[in-house]
Length: 103
Length: 166
Image (cartoon, rainbow over all chains, first blue to last red; front, side, top):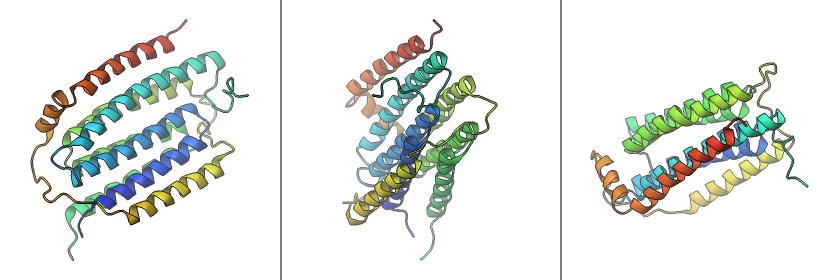
């Protein structure tokens, strides 16, 4: 039984949906950021798998994954800084209570 | 039909990744969630190794497990209310979130079942792709590479400004 592209794509889809559920259903802002990282990881698996099985000589998927990892690191740094700033101002990280911009 | 060792490795890693991802989402205590997230990141790094993307695997371990996760743990430490053991509660829309996630999974799997891929004729065997990756990054993709470095600089300055004590 050989590994195929579909194995990786199914795993990637499952991981993405778990992350999506967490991002929608969590109250803690840090937990939401963690779930977004999970989703980005799922996308990276799909990209690297595409690169390995469909275009092994051009490596486009791996380059794309590298840039996603870079942007994810920047996003995590800024996101957590925002969470810390909110915590300092309002003593909470629950997104249900951070409703300043909700009408 | 014999079972290849890669297939066995894939299934073991896949089970670890999915279980730890579920733990991230379902754990009551957010510190446990962060530890499960580390497990999941390491599993994804193992998947990259299976896909012969050694450099991405190394970057995954260094950047995600080494940097992002430490950042997350620091943020948890600074905002954590140690009195409550339920630091990672679900909100009121959790059932609907579950419906949406399962529906999206169904759509993706349905599309996957219908698609056919034009598999590459020759997969590169045991070749080290890292030199090729570096060559591409500094020739064809040098502009995105530079933009990424500017982005990281901006993110660093932004994070410092946001988190600074006033």
